[in-house]
Length: 168
Image 1 (cartoon, one colour):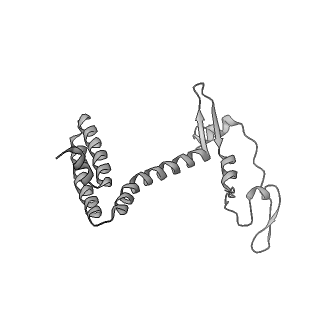
Image 2 (cartoon, helix red, strand yellow; image 1 turned 90 degrees about the horizontal axis):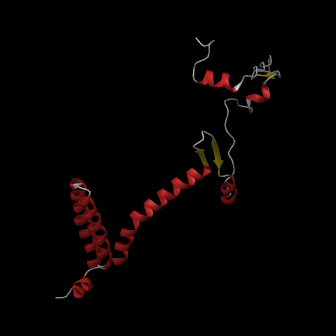
Image 3 (cartoon, one colour; image 1 turned 90 degrees about the vertical axis):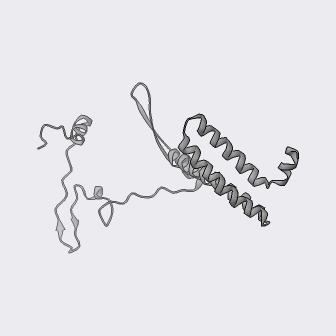
């Protein structure tokens, strides 16, 4: 009995799955990861039996689909990760500077519209109310919200890190 006649009798999806799993088990053994090699051997046995049963029942197409599920899942997961990173990426350079890269062109290409950021005010942004009187729900005129004093970036950083001299 030759190797060629053995390969002709084996279902092609089972041959692909067996080859891939044998390579994975060999890699695990070379990395001295016996636990992973044992786990993958169990997966080889269970998956091999499932694919063999599908092929022997005449469902070779279903066996190919079963093999395609895992790579399709990982490729789609990788694509989602890449797309989310494209939309907003902060790049830090060796000299300490940084840049923010947004995917506005890709969003426009895909037809994704920018969503307005919801604020805590029902009738719009609170910025519209700064320095102007407004009406509350009872139609009472409320005094204007005072405009906050301008602060420097150093003061803002100190406030954000709770290191300002006036903080309690």
